[in-house]
Figure 1 (cartoon, one colour):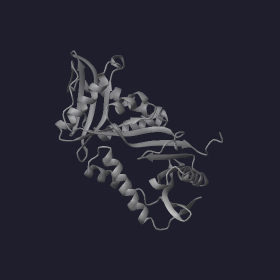
Figure 2 (tube, helix red, strand yellow):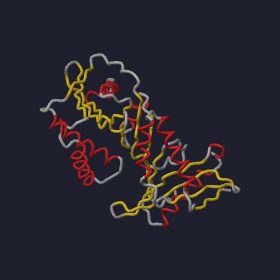
Figure 3 (spheres, rainbow, N blue to C red):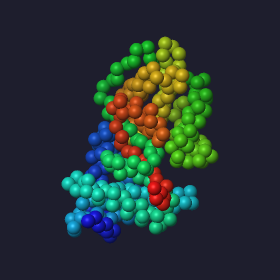
Figure 4 (tube, rainbow, N blue to C red):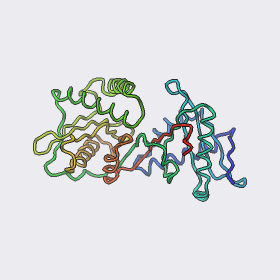
Length: 304
């Protein structure tokens, strides 16, 4: 029988959690230094988590960690960790821990529950909507060029139109993923772009590309180098809609990989928003692994 008890001392859990998080990130192609930097960001936010030990007949089989915090004036829950040791997996402990976490958050007034998955969870969270994925791939050698496709630096004349289009696309991604309202997404877009590229095309450590086929522009790319140690972050690798379905998506990714190596980094990382299954499938075929996946569920859970 599954029993769940809130812990007063989180030390053993935190050591176990950090070890698992490091292992999952490095397995996805993130270097040791970059994985440690990512862990630092997580470590800074776990002080308020409530951590519980999951036991079966007095034997510890895993942990679950939860928190409810104010988000835009509304209590929002989060499952920070839910892990069952491999020896005890598949015996119903996972579902019992999930149900406990949901109930704990409902009791504290949460109207939504978020989770960040860093390891396979089977079908346990299938009814939680996917809000986004962080993907990465280690680039060990220059990518194979796609015949007839080239990438060149974006010109100052091309930048203003690109910026307007990119901000609009970002707003659309956020809204489609269900993360924010259209009005909130516009404000976030304006704020994020002003922070990320304050000097526009001249912002240091950024590469802005125009991707061409037979001399005609077919897409663009925007990458930030040194985002983490050895990691380039691809903010955008975009192919115009009328040119899709011709293999140019992989060509755009190859251009990003080439820029990653040219900048001295060895891993390309990016976010794909929920609802964009076409992009997710492309990235999977190209060998980009899921580093983290964010999902959410409206609370209380529907009786159905």
